[in-house]
Length: 205
Image (tube, rainbow, N blue to C red; front, side, top):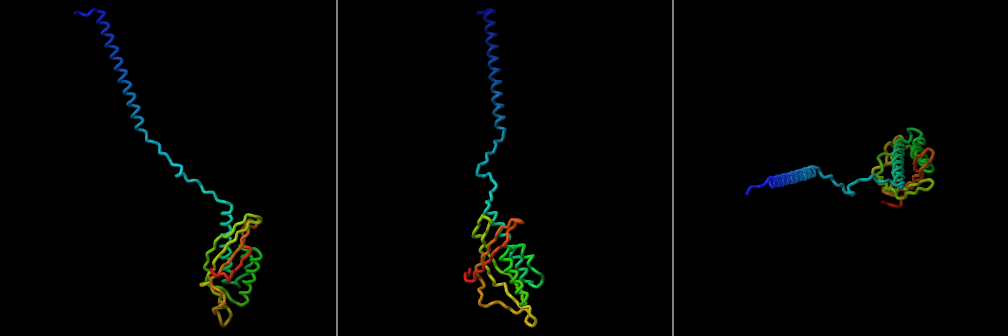
């Protein structure tokens, strides 16, 4: 049976509609595929766990005071050992004042003067193991340092004519004993100085 022109027109329109629908389906498929490729191509951003973030450690005022006092204590030993090794070389008071304050300053100046009068000097050096045992931020700030002195390699020798180099160590003095220093912060100029020292010969360490 022959199709009418009307039927032919309907069929043509239906074919056109089908082609348009197919075109939209293909276009949508292309867009979706492109989106998937784009997402797949992006490298995932790494997540950093909070535990891996390192923050600067805060330093407490007590820790800062302890470090400053320990530095002053080490300077005290550096200068006092220099003075003990050469007591007649010069007037050591101004040099010792860089690390000490009275009463420790005057006490040690007198010890150096006594060595020069013998005459004698020290050789070798003390073994030491200082540690901070107390920190006070009052007025003035004060730090107590407890040390263990080992005098095994430190000796007193004579400079007297005819007996130069003779050992003058006191045989009754212990060679290892506790030593305490109080280091105080002074305001003008701002610095830490060893103010008091106390050898505890009765306390071996």
